[in-house]
Image (cartoon, rainbow, N blue to C red; front, side):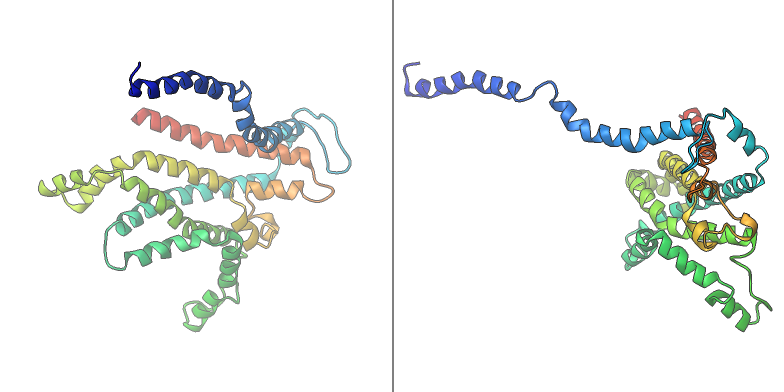
Length: 313
């Protein structure tokens, strides 16, 4: 302690408890709550409160300006005789059934192809991802111009003699729905391809090399190594596609100019909610009941997918 070295170490050891005490005093019990307060406030204002309010309004006949009162299950009984709602449900379910397999498998195939280090492959990666960064409204407007009866596609088909009259892409009930489905699939390919690319990075290349040495072909390696390696990602993607397809709005809204097509036969459930809730005479009670119905319809496929995932695990 009398050496020069001891004379330097004593003050340092004496300062350590004081520094530790100072550090503890700067973190009060409410400091963590202050840090998470903005996130909690955002969750309460923009998620929990609108959800609770919609649940309450579903049992009322509230309108935008005239107010309303509790009506029990009257809004849900009205759904049973709402033919437009039945049409919207059929459209939304068809939308989901077509979009899920296409957007589940085609992006995976594209990811396997662009994963390879080939000359110029970066161009194709960028080309496939470009529709993702484009605005859905702008893309839908461009598709509307292309598919119009006086649009580019009909003009080419008529000039080449493939058809004798314009194809009603935007006026026929099923053609406009499948046009919107094609737009959704085209726009989503790049997005889900990027998700699959990140998942393929976790599949060990040694497995492919060992299988190739044993004589396994490309298809067999894809089926027995790639698919099991990205199975969890496929389940995640299927959930995302299911939710998006059941909540489709922008594509159908723009392609039908917000009218829902001839007789409102091309609407989705979200479009129906928007139709009932808009304007000064909007029926917020019935629109809230429809939003609750959509919530439980969306929850059904998610529970099925979760059940399948648990069974395979």
